[in-house]
Each structure stands twice: as C-alpha cells, then as structure tokens.
Image 1 (tube, rainbow, N blue to C red):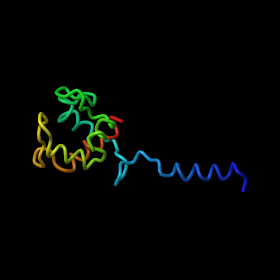
Image 2 (tube, rainbow, N blue to C red; image 1 turned 90 degrees about the vertical axis):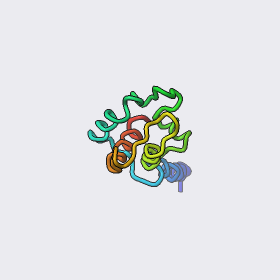
Image 3 (cartoon, helix red, strand yellow; image 1 turned 90 degrees about the horizontal axis):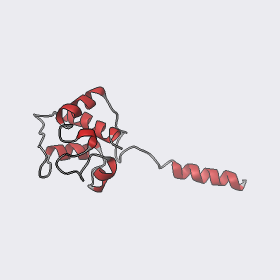
Image 4 (tube, rainbow, N blue to C red; image 1 turned 60 degrees about the vertical axis):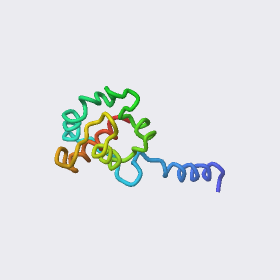
Length: 111
C-alpha cells in the first residue's frame, strides 16, 4: 500500500473521534423555543452568554468546561442547584423539557 494511502487512513481514523457532540449524548440543537426561554429566564443575568454578576463565569463553552459543565444535563443540574448569586430554577419554575431546551441552546449558541 502506498505510503500516502496509509497516512490518509491513519488521519481518517484519528479524525473519526473528533466531534462537537458533548460526551454522552446527541449534539445540542438550537430551537426557537429554547432561544425564547433563554431570553425570558436567563438573558437578564446572562446577556449574550455573559454574566452580569460574575463576569468571569460566562456561558461560553470554554468557561463552562473549566467548571465541569459540558453537557445539557450538567447545565440543568446547575440550574437546579446553582452556586451563590444565581437564581435557583426548580422543576416547577422551569420544567425539565424546557430546561433541556435552554441547555441545548446555551451549548449550541455560546461555543
């Protein structure tokens, strides 16, 4: 087999592991409903993915990942049990399905 073909096969094998999909699930999808829910519930404190109270803790993927938040489930967990300064959103305030839409929106929008 020619050397170039072997190189291409190896490269293809390595690249097959590269994905934007968060660990353990399907890629996040931006929906109109997720965007609207984010605008209503989250944007007052997180405009454009920022953070008005703690500017260093934005919703941008790298910052979230630095805090162990990489999946929609991680975001929903944080919504349910936030740290100091963040409003707690329980299942009555934001049902699980809506929380998931918000989480998907965050992960897809603030890369």
